[in-house]
Image (cartoon, rainbow, N blue to C red):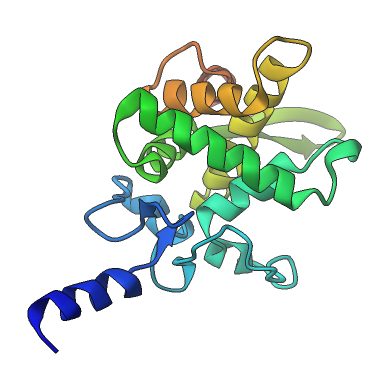
Length: 204
């Protein structure tokens, strides 16, 4: 085999999401060390499509091994009428990533990981009942819950802005991810995160 054939073989063996977006070390970086283990972009999470049909709910913490883009797809399938329509959710995410690439000229998976880092609340408040009185106590948020909350807020923000508006859900999802990755206050996810952290600060 000559050099050109070897290079072509290597290109064929590289796994790119939607056969387009690279997931290797150089393409996608997770800047936050605390959630690195819970953002599935390496090793077993390398997939051409965000559709592994895995049973991630069976055991505690198993969903941490689910590819992060598949978790976004699954989170979009909410509100009754959308339940189980995974192909539709995949198409929405694919279109949103194309739009993100046009906006930023960067790998959309990398932008999405930045959005998750910025959208996850670091501090929350929990209810503590003592002698019949209930008070709130500020607590640190675990890395897995941080990722869960971030994905939920991004999807909820996209869903709310697309409802009864002229924009498609893919456009709204792309806008939400872009604003969240920049830390902009136009993002629903960033607003919710700030609100949660503000309440937690007052309950310290």
